[in-house]
Length: 381
Image (cartoon, rainbow, N blue to C red):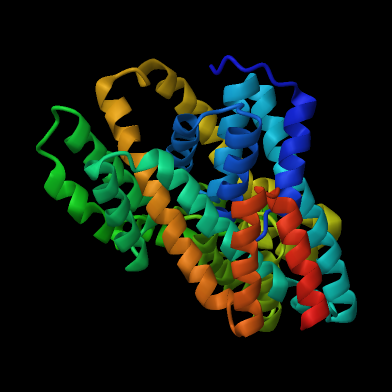
């Protein structure tokens, strides 16, 4: 356990802040977590953040809540994991409930798209800056550079993130320990994408005869337990369950719900809140949200007890040495992907460059950068 003493109230405040301004998906939120907890408060180190990422990628469901709950556990045990996860998810849950109410009452949310046209360039700048900052400490030798480039290429080729992280950890074992015979497996592992989720395909046709709220909870608990690959991996399974099998949402409603999940802060899996609200109002929103995030939390607690027993083993240490440069490659590929979608004209390009300049010159808190981007987007669009 880390030696830093952190109050539960401080954990709540920090993760409320990150959850409120965590636009741009997992990489942007990872950058904000590092900025706040590693660089500013020094509650955890980059090594501990790498462990959080490795743990989070190994578990099903959305990745970032897994990172957050792991960090909370390391700082304040089970209570820390619970309050960190709840604080992180509360802002996006509350906003999604509000947007769901407006959507189903008025079928439109004016002005929101303009705001996010300014947020996109700001998020691009934040991720690219975090890539540079983490790269300075993680790419210390030629082996780290090779692993970082390998992770970047795998993700640019749209290979599975979990398998890429595992492969980079195995490369770390090959490079930094005596366990040398696994390099061919490391190279092939990320390309076995179809093996991750195929086993769960048959589960999606299961049906339980019970009340709609219990059925809603069952569906999202099942999805949270069996979907690897982050929040986006859950989207086709949600579509199959609530649009095609049960007809709880129309195709248009589902597409709009996914869009709201992407333009609100927090993980895209918060789309579950939108579905739950449509099915059973605020009660349904709570049930669906808790159900999709609960399985990975329960698995994390079990996994942590195993990790405590083996964390000093040389193979575990070398595995994590491979994960750290992989994060650099992961952030860079995500930054370029977001840039291609967020920088659509000269104005958005200038906003992104201005964001990089501000981060370099003033080390501005990412929250203010994102807020300024939203205001400029609303004014300029």
